[in-house]
Image (cartoon, rainbow, N blue to C red; front, side, top):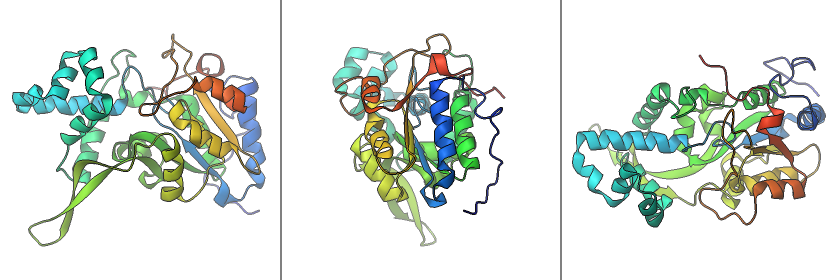
Length: 315
């Protein structure tokens, strides 16, 4: 089989250097080696983003971005803070936030960016990530990506994999930063879709503006599988996630002929990151996702035991 790699495959001594020796690393390395005989068109890997490629605590990065947008809107017009959803957020009233519901609050925040072009949104997202700091980790948000996952992505790319992101977050937000952070092209990002309106401009040509309407369901659970198929048209043989929102994607990738691997990241390191049971944002969890993974025979990554280094090197 002829192959055209742009990067050399790592040797055993340099392969995945931030992954500690042990059963988890062995399972991933064995999978990588087994894919040498897989047709290049079938070498597809899908990664969740929040909690899988970068830190999602204490808040999702996209929520931090939307809160930044809210603060700017209130600074420009204090009356914005009078809205029920925004008043609850700005006061930190968890009881009120719970009563309103995260989906309603999320759509209210999204509405603050309605009417702008996709290009303006992209630049605002990039500018935010360039300056924003994590509230507790002492590093910029863009430096909260996981070094071991970056190494795995690079190794997959060296082996002619198509690396994609399947996220519950907003497609446009992740597409704005995916190439810079992960080397993943915007068109290889599958996420929760927002509708656009086509409007006329002065010269008669069409222009796009954002709305506050979703196209379909949030990209979690079964929706993640159908959206990968409809938007990418290829089934992954490797899937990596961290919550029940990734369950269907992981099971879909694991089932089938030939080399296949489902990888679940367990956040069990409260010294270097956070220790918690990952939950889906929009679907109910029937049992801990780690219990599902163990029963299904997926590869579970212990952040505490399996990673020598957690975060990407600061720049």
